[in-house]
Image (cartoon, rainbow, N blue to C red):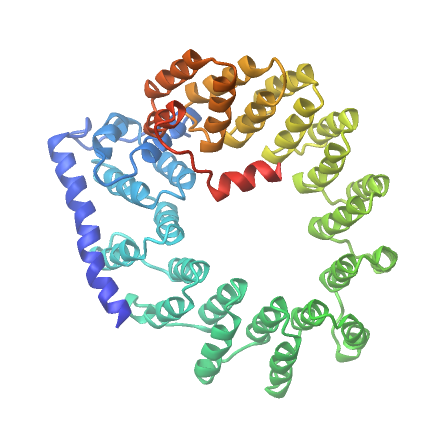
Length: 523
């Protein structure tokens, strides 16, 4: 019933956007009046940034988004549309309007990938009313064939939105779109439900429909792992025993699921006993089997057992993946054994496993926490040499350290080198510099320069950054500087920045969002 009323509501919402785009197209015609070949070359990053900024600034229904987009009609391509949509995954309304606007350009057709991305965007932004109406229109217009992957995205979106019942109803509605649910669809639904901790709902649904499908070991393994993830080892064992009772062909994945469930439930000894018996059932343990115990021993701070398992893997010629190595590196750094962590990095590369940014950042965090400037900067150089480019967290941690200890010259060098390495600072990176400089004697003017650069780049600052900078300027009696910055914000190209000018003047209370609080504290 809820789904039916939801669909009726979507007609109004989607029709509103359709008519809105149509009216804008008629009053502001696209420059392309005839069918012309559209540019399919890779779009310039600047073009993607410019369109993405427009979608971000004009996200409200009353904004004349289509008129602003018309200037880009002659430059549109499927590649450009895909990149813009990927960049704007948190802008459901704007992304949808952009999609409809592009669809009306003469000679242009969306790629299948664009349809997939938009469905994902609408689901991620919880615009479920528009999403269902969009799917129904696609079905009726035959513009795009709705496939299983599209429905799987709907499953995932509802699960992540803590709406497991709606995810299940989406499964029941597959027939409306000409899709006959298979065991693969069932597996996908159960997987996303369990991934989002809706294990009880997943189990209840499976018990209701399992007579309709030929469930395989994979199906049961999903539920076993789901129960294990929430610490219900007893329930996991029940599902595993049911799998045995139905005569399902057991594989290493099934055993690994139960081993992991037992370990997460604190039954490591029982898991190890089962691990030793796997071979007698004709199943050979793999690297994942051993990794389960490595994670369990790391959790228990049993480093000796961790390296015993690693040595055993070497004897079987099994190589841990990067996530397993990262788990050990994190534990070593937490225990102050950073030299051992470096040795493990070397071992990874010797065994053909490429460390990722997380591997290096864990060690970098240790150096930053202990104010080891030289080792921290050297590690960044090692990352670049090893073809693992530093990411936002790498730079934020290092810059925060350099400013904190007063190495402003090195901070400037690092800042200037970021662009050469293909990294362009985001709002969090600017905030690290501005907050750090505001706390240092004689560095307020430099903090203002970073703030102005951020504004010139069209990056809206955090409210907490505005508040800190404003309060510091007031403390030094520099009220004219506040007005200069506010006026600059009002002249900015971003609507969001223009609106924040009020906060710089103090006309509006600054409220720190939970996201920016987490961003600043975690770096």
